[in-house]
Length: 327
Image (cartoon, rainbow, N blue to C red):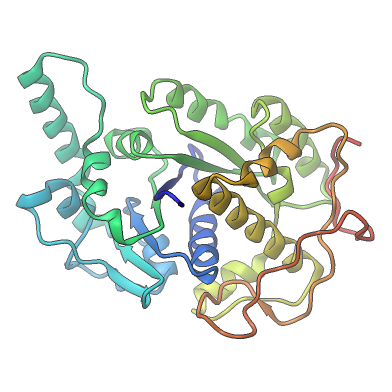
């Protein structure tokens, strides 16, 4: 039986594509028939809430502040993005402003009452009371490592951290996340996602090589996401994104593989082999096969034509999109 899996999308550096990855993963899981709750903890206006089409103007009927307050807050009420599949607890800067201070004060009171070094598990405890109707809880965090992000990491089963592959210097920021995770008592599984990769750019190639060293075997190279401006444009225009180019097909397959990994982890199946195979020096990178054009990526509504991408066969012909990897 599958367990409820909490997935936290977190990164130390802004602009790495954290919001886009969170939206893509949430919609992919919903497209596969899983019930997903997205918790937006990032107060920026152009975040997950806006990208999922939810209203973000204050005052919001329910936010993470109400969730943390528990019985003292308003009753749980999530915004329905896709009925029966994808729900959202939205955020904006004004309504989420008290959250950092609230978490700090509640933790200080609990620590003073017990006199011990308690785990920052307030969000963990509150999520346990509302997650029973879902298969996945996806949490988008702010870039800083304050009380909000720490509470999210303490509640996580899995952490996905996108890395901006446009420059090798961007990779160095993941060391900050790794150091912070060492202080987290829960110790979730951590996977790094190469994002915004451009196969022909030397900076991207250098960034990927550096990430292999720093990620210590947790780099999801087989779920590499190429730079694709059409995705952000489709989100901004509130329309479905379709894979009509080789780069878009590669991104579609990467998102599909991320969904397969998370479902495999929830069900206790072989999904984690995606991470293990990424660093197996005996395995060649299998480039994405050509997929039928007009295949939706962001359309999570249950339609007959919204089928998952095929698994890349070992005999798949090489395409032009092939990031450098161990041979």
